[in-house]
Length: 71
Image 1 (cartoon, rainbow, N blue to C red):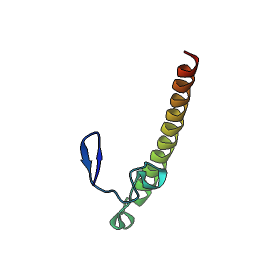
Image 2 (cartoon, rainbow, N blue to C red):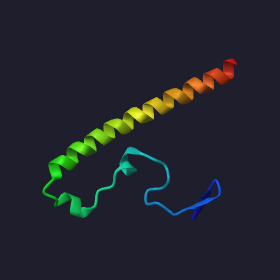
Image 3 (cartoon, rainbow, N blue to C red):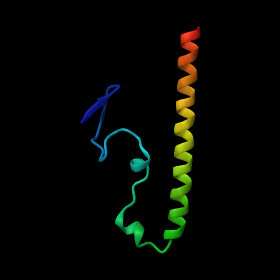
Image 4 (tube, rainbow, N blue to C red):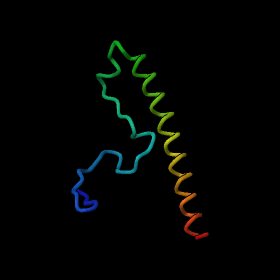
């Protein structure tokens, strides 16, 4: 177990770093679901949202670093 800010975290498959690969995990029964097309659409939208959030976070981090350097 890893401790983060005093909270014990259980080990996570794929590590703790959030990436597009481990953002959404499919189970084997999801692939046999009759709603597979709906799952694929939700998955694609979620990955687009993930990419936008990561770009925004990097932008905000860059802005805050620049402000700290200037101010």
